[in-house]
Length: 154
Image 1 (cartoon, helix red, strand yellow):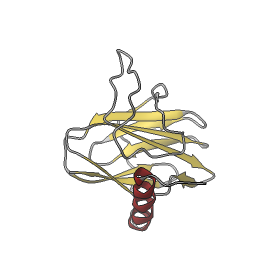
Image 2 (image 1 turned 90 degrees about the vertical axis):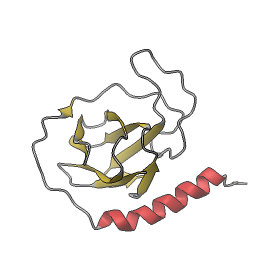
Image 3 (image 1 turned 60 degrees about the vertical axis):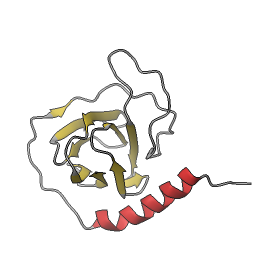
Image 4 (image 1 turned 180 degrees about the horizontal axis):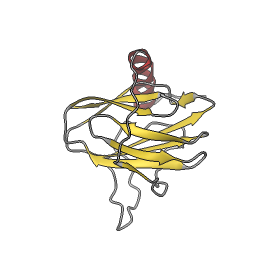
């Protein structure tokens, strides 16, 4: 028997509400010098196809990579985004890590923070930052112009 936890219901509601909002937005191309090479995969208890909207599990951080307050993991396969596009809310000041794995080479871009990462086909790319600006920020890919989600910082 499948039992939904409060986190599962919240994730499902979040995903459904965000999909509509994200489908109407887009991004222009720009050559962003802040695009970095992908970092090593992060250690998280969340499966690769899930977005974690609660504080990250207690994974032991390595000395060079402090534990993020919020882990957001997205996969792209055959042009489909998993989990589906939506809004993810974080608190101002949280350390956010976004990890994206795509089956096609691309670039990840976080608008408003002007952060990016290369996404080699089949390998994860990550950005990590302190959410120090409030507002609504698109997270998308540049080559395929897919809106992955909207980040709400309160």
